[in-house]
Image 1: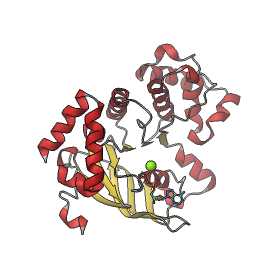
Image 2: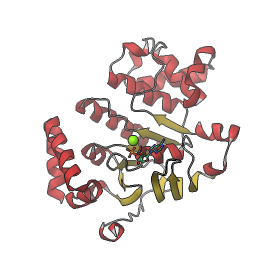
Image 3: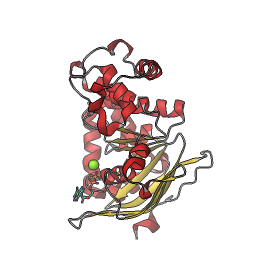
Image 4: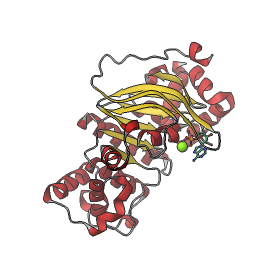
Length: 291
Ligand SMILES: Nc1ncnc2c1ncn2[C@@H]1O[C@H](COP(=O)(O)OP(=O)(O)O)[C@@H](O)[C@H]1O
Ligand SMILES: [Mg+2]
């Protein structure tokens, strides 16, 4: 079995403390019969940035959605701190979701609202952002939103409409909005998939540095292996719904990548990276060197 040959499958994080998220034997089978996740177990400590990699259809989005319960797990348990998320429903579930910040591939901003209004909508939880239009916010929320906008490099843009911004700027708003929730955990589903390579690196670097500053753990779905390697503290590789690699970026050898992606697909990933630009090419060379 794959599990036996990939090394190191179990990576011990002595330097990391205080578990924030714990998944126990999480499985998901959709009504269609598609088995998206099989027995996924891992825990994420405070401040750790996890890059979740794997080919299309591996179950990355399903995993993220099970954690915030936008998808109902078929079995298994999920704990956020002391709270068992898998037991919650209704109001308790909505409250727990507010403890999880979400960053989306397509930003999910309200286009005709200002940057500031979009960030403030984070106070309401990401499911009902549009309602911010009708709300008033306390000064402390507004002060926090200003300082977050400053932090993500948009201090001067607070009053612009979201639809006036570039893709990279929109994602910065998305990050600020997630942080405005004061989340205990950050989830991101392909946050750079709509961005060019250079902007992608800037966004990943921003997520990585705010996570460090705030001791905030994150799970970032990312199909770009080189980006994941450069900006994650830990890589989890999914293949057909199973964890087939869990370890430091430095242990992601060519061999392991071929096992996660299959020889053909991984060849494709390499080609894409080589065509990006010099920096990507350079990091890609490092990947090959390590193997
Ligand atoms: N809403 C859904 N209904 C049925 N099957 C789904 C649904 N969403 C995803 N799947 C299936 O679950 C598997 C994992 O998909 P997904 O989590 O989207 O993977 P990834 O994000 O890694 O591309 C795939 O086989 C996909 O077809
Ligand atoms: Mg996906």
